[in-house]
Image (tube, rainbow, N blue to C red):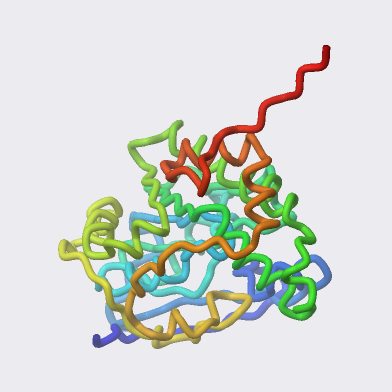
Length: 297
């Protein structure tokens, strides 16, 4: 697939809002450089910053496929191809001109998952825009497995200990996705909910649906994409793993449950089980019966 050409201008000033070049772990201990990116596919035909654009924000937990989704949408010639960009930095209407200046394409796609330290506050959405919200969810078991690998990548001996399971499941996965579900129900006309598993199983259908939702001229669904021409995928800004570099949506693998401690944490949580059902996920092995309170005589 031929990628559209882009030029990125890096403006590094302490005053600019962050596009989140740091990892979630680093964010808690580092601050400083703020990096802005602007892509110009054709510098001689730049769109004025004041021109109306569609801004599509991808809302999700970490490790839910947002880099893949962004790469698929960026294949359309009227959609931007930006690195992970914190759309929350543009919540103030005074920042709209700077937002429009990030890329010349008429449709801007910005993605930045919620972080651990943003539970209860994520997402802070820009207002006064032609805004489209894509809520991307991933089932709790696989999502938490992937999150643990990321969170404990410098302490790999902790990955299989079960440490953090309840926090990751009940506080992070549940509370973040419950908030995103509320946003979907409150504004269904401008919000589309997509399960990561459905995107893998039938990317042609779901990308066609997404292109139509954001108003792209692209009508045909796709299952391949190209490398970004103006930046590189990498941990801390986007997915830096090997799968994203395959340039093709990978078919979902058969679901297995090899971590009994994690599965037990999920099955013992009424709130997690209830949200799974509300998001349309099938019962876990041996049913999804919510734990019942004990009755003492």
